[in-house]
Image 1 (cartoon, rainbow, N blue to C red):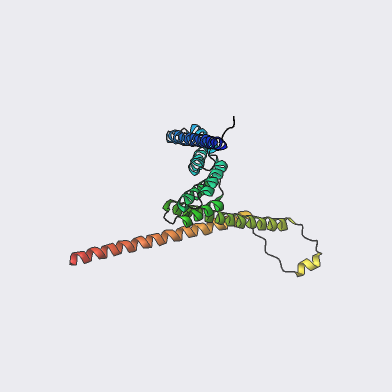
Image 2 (image 1 turned 60 degrees about the vertical axis):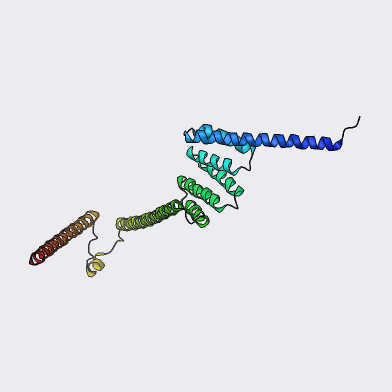
Length: 240
């Protein structure tokens, strides 16, 4: 008895379709369960369901993206970034969804204190979706953080250089003077004594005190001017 080859092929195709449909249903089921656990802030359980969905269909953009969000909530920054990148790769023709992924990558980079990488991610998110006001705000925050960090670094470098100069000057003060005979020493004019640190501190305090007094006088003058202006305004109002 011979079997019809066409019948065998049709049977195999139907079997594969059935298996594929069943697998797709399992993926959707795991995504729904993951979403439910995520809304209840059960992130570990949600991650398990989304991971199963990704295993069932590695090309599921939704499963990869949601898994990234869940890992982010668990502070798994590197793993979250990996999932967002995978999601973006699957949605190359949908700039809005890719923008959302880049936005979240920027958030994860910010959590890792990688400010410049975070800034670039936010810039990319805005290029893909200029209407993302939250990404625009986050970008401004990160740029300010970078600017403050650079200014602080410059200030620390200036302070370090100043301390080195002070140490060098102190070392020079502590160096023994070369011996001189009495005749040459008598012929040379006497050099002024170098200011000690205590004297320098006292001078600085005096300067700061003068500055404070000057500021107080300026504030008093401004207050008096404001009072005179207010009195003038009151007289004008009465005349009216």
